[in-house]
Image (cartoon, one colour):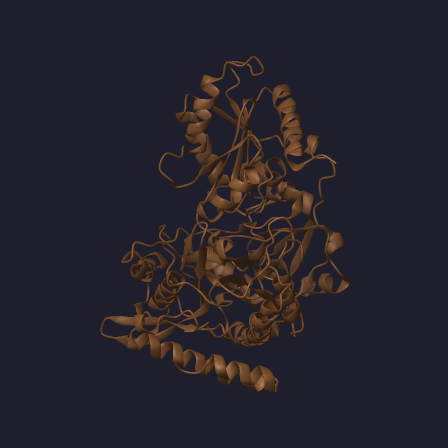
Amino acid sequence: MMSENNLIRQRLNDLREVMRREHLGAFVFPSTDPHNGEYVPDHWKGREWISGFNGSAGTAVVTMNSAALWTDSRYFIAAEEQLAGTEFQLMKLKMEGTPSIAQWLGQQLQTTTNNTQRPDSTEVGIDGSSCSASMVEQLIADLRREGGITLRTNLDPLKQIWYGRPPIPENPIEIQPLEYTGKSCREKLMEIRKALREVHADGMLVAALDDIAWTLNLRGSDVHCNPVFVSYLLIDTKKATLFVNRKKLTPAVISYLQQEGVVVGDYERIGQGIKDYFEYNILVDADEVNYTLYKKVERPIVKEPSPIPFLKTVKTDAEIAGFHRAMISDGIAMVKFLRWLKPAVEAGGETELSVDRKLTSLRAEQPLYRDISFDTIAGYQEHGAIVHYEATPETDVPLLPEGLLLLDSGAQYQDGTTDITRTIALGPVTEEQKRVYTLVLKAHLQLQNLIFPAGASGTQLDAIARSVLWREGLNYLHGTGHGVGSYLNVHEGPHQIRMEWKPAPLKPGMTVTDEPGVYLEGRFGVRTENTLLVVRHSETEFGQFLTFEPLTLCPIDKTPIVVEMLTDEERKWLNDYHQMVFEKLSPCLDEDDRKWLEDQTMPI
């Protein structure tokens, strides 16, 4: 059987044959699909297939003589390992000296003298149906500045060279009951149309799969860990049309859509559906809709962000109640897991993969469990320093009764989505590990306990979480927090808590994670994460103020805490939080689990 590196080499050779026939100097493979999703069905994982890098974010670029892959800090270590032995050069985004894709292509295409490439091959290819209109238009402008390089968008070479390419999923769609959503499809369509009128738009094209699932109160299983289904939704003043593979529709779903006034069209006919759109204008979010469809629009375009994410992220009372129930289910599974973990490690035979399987099995026992919400990160010691590490049979290591295990995991329950990280001392830990662990906890509490004015965005709050780490010369390059869906995608926007400017304000009813960390390459990593609910705190002459309520119910390991480093306020919060965890979970536990939890939640 051909090795992975030889497979990559053969795929690059096949790609270059297509490029030669099409007179292309390079081809670009983004991570996205026609719906601009963060996680995509296997059919559109072209970047992974051509490069071997399987992280959720990255862009591969191939010329006739070279190849490179751009990704962010979450994946630097993993990408370096996965690209080793291939032609691909790792390009570290946001690091000094890293060229942009356009800059690199300008240099590569203008200096090529190898006879295998025509000297005038300064046209670059990209599949315009698999990347957003804004991304393509920016790339067109960037390439034009690099010596007049042009971009071709109507070619998908994978159709010719990817033998055995996975098909587009045909999994059945399910109805998400009103008891969990709190709003009917008709109500949501009314809200969307009202928002469209406010920006003087008659309709809109919806391409984001979680937005479609939320709007229609439907769920699917087309994307790993995300309960969504491949489709488009075209909304006008009178009706909404769902463009979907009809094989996915059960009789119950067909009847439901008819009752809600939603018409069904074929997925492949979305282009014609856009041409048949009869209203005066249409809102098209260029960050959401792919370039190929964007160029098919013949009506005047209202260039505004989609209103759906702003509606979706503020949870209904029913969704908030569902989150509380889901967190109890998840907390029960976590308590059972944590009580099992240390004795199992001491007995020997446990690995990163085995504890992942154990935790998933315990979650699967809970009511309304549907799936994990993302692939579990179980990183022991130095693997914990790889921000998005996912153990494989090749990287899996035994767990020993010493050091730290970073465990980032979550589940999809029909009434809510969970995302939690705990860093666990499996036995004796070093003084450095204790200090870093405590600093990360303090950073977590800086955000958790914050009171802030309504209208503030996550970017304005981000530095407050980091400040305790900055004082010690420490930092992390990922975001501090992201929104969480209601039995939807675990990453939900537009609000985020991160250093990059994200203007979306935090509003009561939004969910957001709180997950600072520190990663010391080759040594260990620490992250502590709860999912929070934005709630009202008070109102003064200066306006309304907000704060955060923790939703996650799971003890935070007290063993590595340097108690003297905590302020009285921080110590009180931890004790109060642990008391709440015990009060909410203990009635649901058997005697042994309850006694274990009582010990873990004793005040410090």
